[in-house]
Image (cartoon, rainbow, N blue to C red; front, side):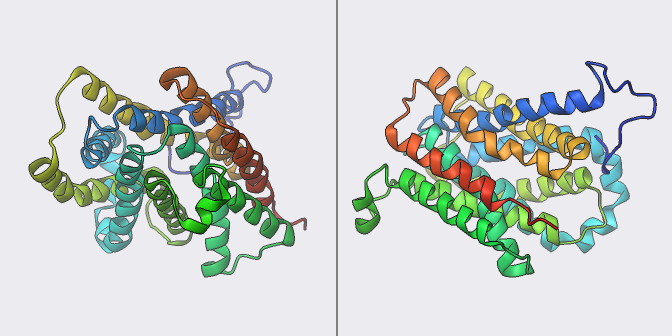
Length: 313
């Protein structure tokens, strides 16, 4: 994986089944399943593995893998790391802490399907934050899309019962997931608008480093005061899946898709995520799709599309 967008090589065969563009489209279909594995494991390990421990070992493992690839580059940029340490620390807390541990905490009291559908609102939050803090112009269609998406998320959180919105009788897990989604939106905005002297994957490696260090004291406290991670076949398998699929594999695939197909097509990964998670949760965890899931998805997915439509020039 390189730090810059790489065009197709001059000698590539445009009609070849295995050319770079076709490989990117394959990864476009694969990446949502890789990201979705995080939500499935979160639900699978709920009540068995402590949440901060899952987040810590996931990102520690990803850090080790990234150092094998980007370690020399990171060392080359060591002075840039020192200069950008505040941004890297905040990004690490958001991306590895809030977007990591919060999901595993929320999974104890909500379903993987709910996690996927609520996470689907993140592109809309990103658009709103970019408008509010960086002056990106919003069209009437984008505003309408954001409101539709918000209605879908609220419908899922309320489990199809509007009275829950009046009495605030939400699932605690849904609120943890919503907090993680807000953290993810801020993380993406910072990545986009905060300048860095490092390339994409070198910066990601540095963020993994700071995120792991930020999680370490909470992991030590959780292990001593709450519960240590049990060493069983299931927990070892869960940690391995978290490292290889939603940790290392998904980010590599996402970066490749964006480099070859561009950001617009790359964002389709976020749109397809809820569908993958719902199917995988049904297949592996036996979760059932309720009517409020279908209504929420029918609002969230078109809302995301409208909110992310670029105005015509």
